[in-house]
Structures are given as C-alpha cells and as structure tokens.
Image (cartoon, rainbow, N blue to C red):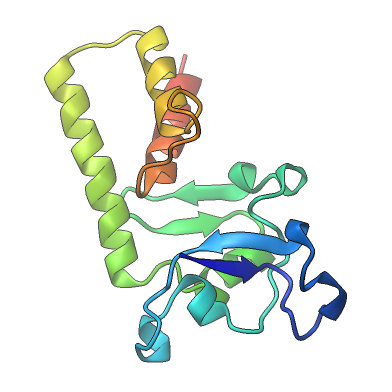
Length: 153
C-alpha cells in the first residue's frame, strides 16, 4: 500500500501535504510494463477529476459494474480516467472482481431465500459499516450488486 495524490504533486504543489489530497492505493504492479500497471503506479502525474474518498464527489453514484467484472462510470470524464489513467479494467482486475461476485452469489444460493433485512445486514458488512470499517478485497462490486438487488421491488 502507498499514499496517492488525486491531484498530482507536480501540478498542485500546494496540496502535496494536504491530507484531503491523499488516497490509499495499492502498489499497482509497480515495476511492470505500463500496460500492466494500474491505480497510482499507472496514474503517475495525471490528475483525477474526482476524489474517490470525498463524499461530496459522490463516486458511488456514477460507478457501475458489469457482471464480467468491468467497472465503468456514467460520467464520461471519469470513465476515461478509470480506463486510461487508472487502468482499472486490466484483465486480472476484471477477473478478480468477477470471481469475487460469483463466489458471493454462490454463498447466497447455498443459504437459500433471504429477506431484505438479511440483504441489508450483508450490505453493511461488505460496505465496512458492520465490521469497524473493515473492507474486503473487491468489496465494491458486491456492494453495488447488493444495492441493485435491494432497489428491486
């Protein structure tokens, strides 16, 4: 894990030590060729138009997932950043998101029919609310799926 800046340090020197500009980031395949890099390593000195950690930027309302693990944004600028700047649809990330969602669905099937309260409890768990802000790998694809499921009549 490393500290990332959603506004690059080079272009925004006054924000270099501003904690509101900090994000936690994975190593992003550091040391690999550029086409295999993702997250902060791929981002380099590029800026993001939205801060994923800032609730005012409302990232969760524009981020969506396809069942094949692809992540996309309804905002065209941020969608371009997801792909060109952060490279979040690299094959292994898509495969990992798909695998996490598929495994989650299998466990649900084994449990049988569940009511809204159980699904809401699972949402709190996967969203980090129930476990003291503990987040599981690829949790957001499961949070997205649960929210869609709960939105159904």
